[in-house]
Length: 302
Image (cartoon, rainbow, N blue to C red; front, side, top):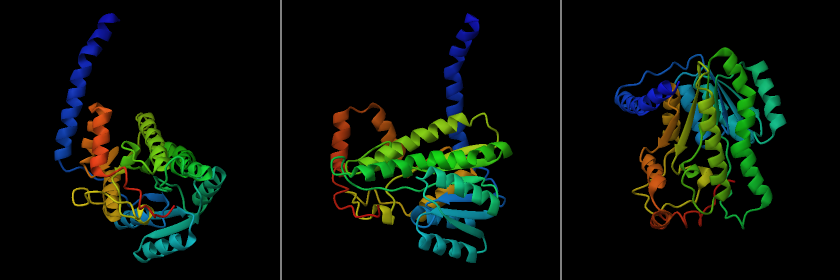
């Protein structure tokens, strides 16, 4: 038994090296993309922003049905009509993902009226753009309930059927702020960090579940209504992402079963730097990049 354990310990670094080299080689080759023509996609927060572009992109790339969840009927209706005109069947339902009972109720309605959801995109989120001491208690709770707990309820509502069918995909639109927080958005950063931990745990938990995958997207500042007014010190070096680009890359990541997607790819360097740089150096980077003051002019949609 001891010899067997010793052999495993010896082989472990060799296996890790093999997987790193294998992943690097595969990244250079064109990936096989799965067909979306049989997929039923549900997008939370699907009426505007990244959610709206995700709905249009899934429809464009051949999804059979697109379902939109959100709290603003006007936005949902407009997006649904636009997608329906393009030729893809689209439905919308009013649903606040922070409300557990409402999520379970609407999930049942979706199954009865539309069918089984095979791709769940957890996109709904809010941000209040204030420091801890300036934040209202109810606003802080709202951020956690929508950005984090909402994922628990939606995933619990739709994942069991995916496991039963041995076919499905859970997607989370997260943020690079989950790994590199900034002042002035403490509610958002905290909730996104919790959301990332949720997805990391879920991804590992589904490794032995054939046919069911996860994708977590961690974009840099995206030019949407939600973060209107947020300023980056060097926009030429770090331009805000376009929501349609985030949508395109997300759908592509789903089709290639990519577990984690950083946008842009340079965000990998930020994560690596944080793993070994001293705190004082990280503080200087934040000062240089202007992240201490980037939310001072925030006037986005909360």
